[in-house]
Each structure stands twice: as structure tokens, then as C-alpha cells.
Amino acid sequence: MSCSLPSQPLPILYSFRRCPYAIRARIALVYSGVEVEHREVVLKDKPKAMLAISPKGTVPVLQLPDGRVLEESTDIMRWALLQDDGKGWLTEANEADVSRLIMINDSEFKPWLDRYKYADRYPEHPVEYYRSQCEEWLAQIEGYLLANDGCLLSAQYTMADMAIFPFIRQCAHVDKAWLEQSPYPNLKIWLTGLLESSLFASVMMKHPQWKG
Image (cartoon, rainbow, N blue to C red; front, side):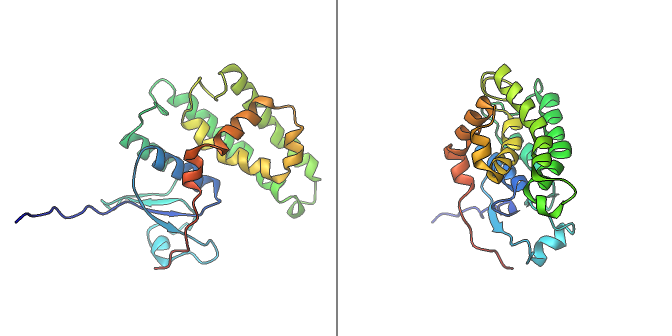
């Protein structure tokens, strides 16, 4: 006769498949080998259980087994990398640069990306104007990739690549034909490599809406 230990509860991840913030969080969790209970959220029908622990109502949200709640995508990424970061995505040496690039992406590029995606909601300027504002960041990305052998900060991926990639993906989807003829060859190679990776495929699996 043997006794089995009780299974430990899994972290609970509230996510939305296409959200770039949720994508970056899922990438870090999968890379780190962290198993979670995935709860797919429909943003027009947010579950009460999520709102109870995170009233701001945005995804991703990670509820840890000890009750702690992580409400920011970069906090979830950092927590995951603390569990296992075998390829050194976040190190003491690169942490400041990682944080700086993510800050620029999230605070400066993302507002222009939203206007580019939904230009009809911002009729004060044509779509080309919003795209030109986005291009300032795309050009910087191109420069980083050229200087660092195909990744943003070194010859290997870091947390910066994985945190920024979902937003560049979103930008590319607005007008794929324009991106194809754009003067950013290194960005296009970088983007294609990440889009075709098994890691990205694994985090984009479809889940039914969670209701509870």
C-alpha cells in the first residue's frame, strides 16, 4: 500500500488569445516550463472570478497558488523566468536594456500602433500619418537587429525580443503588403523567425471560453 502526495494547485492564467500582452506572458510561461490552468477570456464577457482578483479587468492575469496575483504582463514574464531561464533571457547584465526597450515599446509605440490599427476612429490624421509614427520604432528595431546579429540585444533572444515581438506582429498585420516592401529587412527576418517558431505556435493554440 502506498500513499500519494496531494497534487499542488496550478497557477491560473486568465488570457485572451490575440492580445499582445497576453501573448508575451504565455511565451515566457511556456519557455520556462510553467504549467498553468488556462482560462480563456472573452473581453466582452469577463468572468467574475477574474474581476474579483483583478478589478481593472485586463488580461493577462496570473493567480499564483499562494494567492498572489500578477496583473502586468512583464511581471508575469519576470516571475516565469525566475522559475527557469535556461537560455538567459533576463540576466543582471541585460536587465536595464531589456526594461528600457520594453518601456519604449509599451509607452511610446503602442499608442501609435492603436491609432494605426484603428485609424477610422482617429480621423484627424490619415492612416499613413499613424504608420509613419510607428515607423520611428520600426526603424529603431531594424537598427538593433542589424547591430546585434539578428536579435534586439545580443546574438540570442532575450526577454526584450519576446515582449516586443507580439506588438510588431500586430503592426505587421495592419497592412502586410506595405510591410513586405518596407525598408526593414532585418525586422522582417526576425519577425518571420518568431512567427514560424514552435514556441509561438504552442502559445497560439485555441481555447474555448472559460466560464466560472
